[in-house]
Figure 1 (cartoon, rainbow, N blue to C red):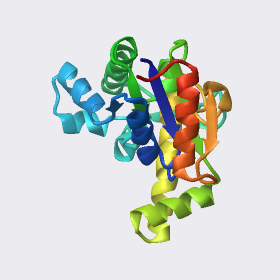
Figure 2 (cartoon, helix red, strand yellow):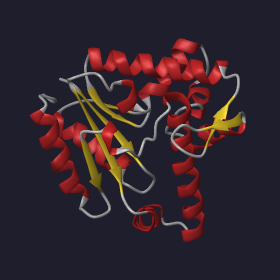
Figure 3 (cartoon, rainbow, N blue to C red):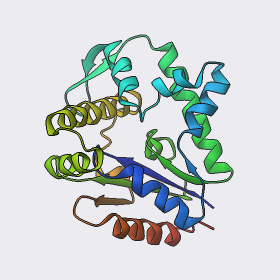
Length: 208
């Protein structure tokens, strides 16, 4: 049945588009179930696993702030240091993603899925992005919060997610080479983006 992975910058509509794609393809949407499985394997509360999850901004900043910095091979600086706990969460997350791909398939949002499953032929990797100001406007409309508050959240989220992928996978998650399909989801209706992804997934034999 295969897997569709989504990498989505803040305000690009990943939380709405990814589950809609899963429904259209007849595949499970793996979101909250991933940190729950990681928690079970590590013997920790689900809240602790969620706090170390790649999709949770506060957890990412906890990871980043617990480290020093080192030169980043793709530009800027990277967090570094001894990370037994964070590496354990990341390793368990990778195992869960691998088992999903080898088993029931599904749609995965975040978790650096394109890097973890990069060498599988039965996976479609999708990147949702768009100009920062258009993503901001979309997020403000969706969240119904003051612009400056949402802007701070956007900047923190984008920076933390990038730091996560750069630290663990030594690459820039915004680079198109990691994906089969890159879409400016701020320039198209979400329904159209869903159609595009579903068409691409079915072309790769993914879905029921």
